[in-house]
Length: 426
Image (cartoon, rainbow, N blue to C red; front, side):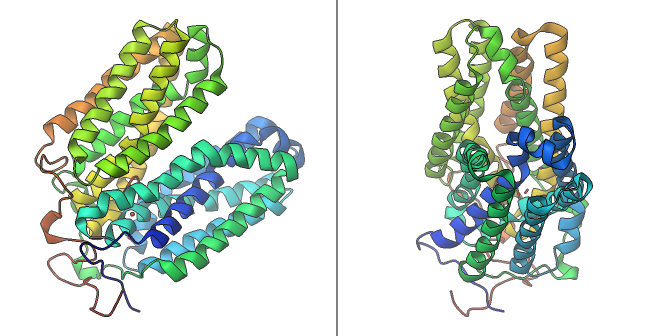
């Protein structure tokens, strides 16, 4: 097997990066599409809409539980076959959902898809990082993670509309076919990288305590906690403001995230630290404005747009910091840790927001989110040495440049020819 070694100063490998971005797009659609199809899927499966909603929950739980152990078990295998295997798993799971009339079988397929998702997110950022020189690492990760943003802002609404036009089973069948097409694309355009030799692997606990990793994971947790407090309950907060158009608020937020990830791609490789500080400060400012002026539709929509721009770029900035702190060789394991923390933040933020909503009302949501976002901002401000260094440009930690090996040298590509977030999650 030959591997590609990125050359300094060359253009980004767009075809390969877009293949990885499309894989991310496919995974997000697979995860969230049932949420938009509850009324259509429930009669066909003979269950309530709430139980169809559990198809999303089951996926998330399986992804949460599988990310770390599956990534650790597979880290010695060649990277491209593992990535292809996850996509084949998605194709199989989506095909089963498209054909099954049994809720139990459908739920089992969703669990399989969740395991594939947890494994894939741990690979994507590290894979992207190994395809490019260190000074372009952040932009490569931004291209890959753009697939998530496009899936959320465009893919889910389009998939829901497609299901209404041609049937939800055909929609899942189309997803299965898309996963197979991405397999072919990856086989042709994404370079192969070897796995890690047993003697050269850093233990899971060792990766978790590498300089900078705890700080990056802390920022991930605080950011997701604060974000989900507001985002999960955006509908009751919108009603509280008197505006009432949740669909418009979500559309503004989704469109703004696209702007945010585009801007981040232009900034991340030279001004990663200032960009992340600015994004977190902007989210904190938005929470203050929403808390102080909840009654103006213009203020609401402007604030939500600013929130979307800031949050759209934040995951790329945080994931790039994680890959820089761990090195591309350890990025899979580090990102699997981040995937678990990310999901914990989503669950914890939704729970915390629910407590605030039931205890003090929707007006308390911005003030509940604010200290959590401020916590993330504080950790970034203090982490100027390892996690979020003050120097411009991508750092190459401990000599582990793209495609390079740890000191043992086991993973350096032969001179033959020619992922970061969340992960080769996340």
